[in-house]
Image (cartoon, rainbow, N blue to C red):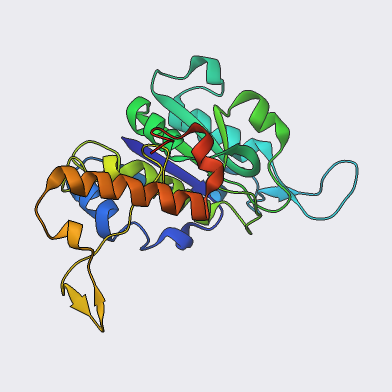
Length: 238
């Protein structure tokens, strides 16, 4: 997969993709990530990427011209109806659809080339959304200073689901939200620490009992922290 990130603050990403799973995936050529400065697609001497909103109001709005120029260069067309199969142009904004684990799975499965536009200020000229954007995405019901942190979240969630990105083929399958529940508790050595013992069921080697315990604890944690997930969860009843 290839991901191009459009931002007015490219230095934000200077080292963020050089660690952990994303770094390994890049070295293994599973993912290619390019960070592009939106100002490089302007055509005025001041390299202006924003302007005041029509109708008045506070703040600034990202201009359409540099975004259209960037997407046209990266896709070969400024028209989402003519994008090649497997191409997505993503706008990160608080007005987008909430990004979830199933969203990440769909991106990992269906996308060959993603262009990620980091919103800023009061937003992006709506003509960008009307013509270029295939997916408007929010990572949660809160407002960030810009789309750069959200881009890191989006890319990390997608990359770890790409084939061979993780060391174990089942690691992603057992993550929180993968079956509609939060993950179960985990323990490691020592078996007893400051008087706190690891549950005996995890030490007895009975894999059927271990899986039953893990499912029960996942349900328990989901009820405690995210009861809203249980309505559509697989294995809702014990």
